[in-house]
Length: 289
Image (cartoon, rainbow, N blue to C red; front, side, top):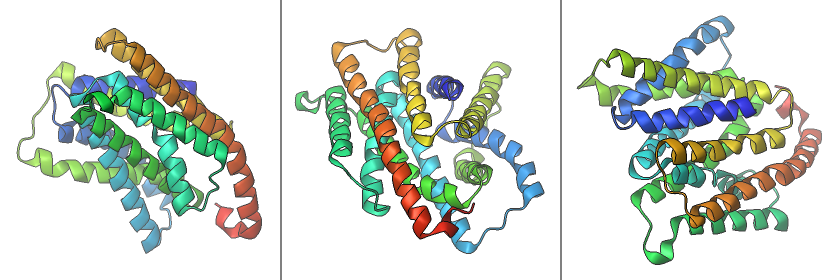
């Protein structure tokens, strides 16, 4: 999982760099095209059986995840890499609130406290009371909320579908969404930039595969907590390579957000295990896959 976090950190940093040279559609086309080319042989070989509802939900999740990708690029362009990534990683709080609303997950006082800590860190980072809210901050928060919604939907889909099927639909939707923006002005990148685009697609794929593989050996809560190190790594890269300012407000706000995410991952995971055990007893067929 730590390797996955490192790969995701490098992927985020490369997206931030490429955003200055390519449109969002061009980055998306290469990023998702690479992933789909790798996943397509698996779909031909396995030929998973999907009903209409399953296909609709997979497409919906793909649209949501792809939308998050585009919003994140807008945030990278409008704000610093470090602050954007920390704001995106407020998603455990949004996931918890949405899970309680739509999946009937328990919202205990400990979980509520974790959400409040995350919101406090978010407020310190954005600093709204001094008029420092920028468009980049709003994009980062929107991406965090969208990741939270995506996590809730992904929990539902992961019980019923193979992870590779979910990822393949994600890449397919990403390719289709990028075609309108590149069809009128398709540019062939130079050798150096082309290598970086391919590297972007490869890093995105390797990070996803490594993360999914890691979940075979550790609990979901532990994996989600380790993935939180992506925010720390990306913040360090932003400060060292992109000259993001290192302020006391950033350190305090980031510490609160990351600490909240780790706490919600560990504590929420233990309670979530108990919830899943109870649901499995009530409806064992839902957990067959």
